[in-house]
Amino acid sequence: MKKLFLILAMVLSLLLAVAPAMAGKGVDKLKGSPQSFGAYAAAFEEILEEGYAAVPELIALVQSNAATEAKATAINALGELKAKDAVAVLGSLMKNSDDLSVIFNSARAIGNTGGNQAYKILVDLLENADTAGYKEADSVKKAAILGLGLLGDKKAVKPLLAALNDLNNDDITRIYAAGSLGLLGNASGLGLVQDSLNSDDPAVRTAAIRALGAIGDASSINALSSLAAPGNQYGVRGAATAALAQVKAANMGKGEKVGFIKKQLEETPQASELVAWGVRELKKEGTPQAMAALRELAGKQGPEFAALVRAAKIKARK
Image (cartoon, rainbow, N blue to C red):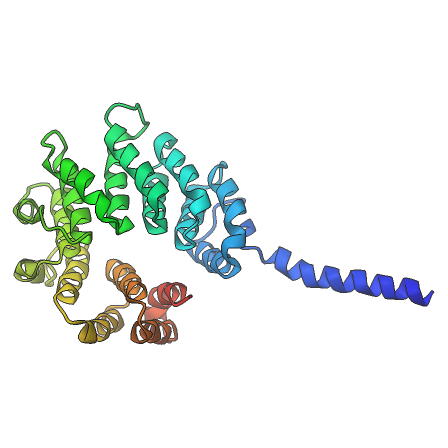
């Protein structure tokens, strides 16, 4: 009787230990009916806490018929986890999806993951977009260009230069190529991008603003300062504010860069483009000062800091 009691006690203790982990699995929270942004954000954080163990289920989810927001959350988690196991799957999604959110988030996740396989997949998508019959060929090409810029691999300069100089590409595609080249330290597209600020097409102008931030040339400061000023359209102001901070940071010494970024984020914590760039840049810096800044930002209090706190907390992870 005593032996049976001990066995039952051990089984019960195992069930109690496993149940909370199973109930709290972040991937499971992405399944089912569409949820609020806050629910997806909380699931995203939980997935990152679980770490690479969540990758197989994330891959299964992005291949399912889950809601677009759920797929986007899972794809972004794969990118944040640098899940090399998912790169081929994400490349296939780009080829076959007609959902622009899936296409662009997949490209970013592949770029953030990095590595030679990621490079080959993105180059293949870029070079075959016009002939392979993808459902959203134009978007696949643009997304692949963005992904190549995020890779941080100088090998990407050659295909990006080809996209920049191909006059058969539309203006935005060439501007995207200029911006991605800028992320790789190549300013070949600066003239095209600066000229594009005068375009009659708002989408072209906004793409040019973002590309100027990626290129980081100090000659862009005056133009971006004007565009970031009150009186301009909201979306233009937001893009210009982030781009202006990028350019200024790019022209600072390492000793002052972290403090500058932190101050920008504290002063405009609801500027989504600035926040996305700033926390990513601090993570990339990776110095003790940069990581301390992220942890401090993650501890801010007040509703105006909510989005910043969430982003900083994610990037402050090791």
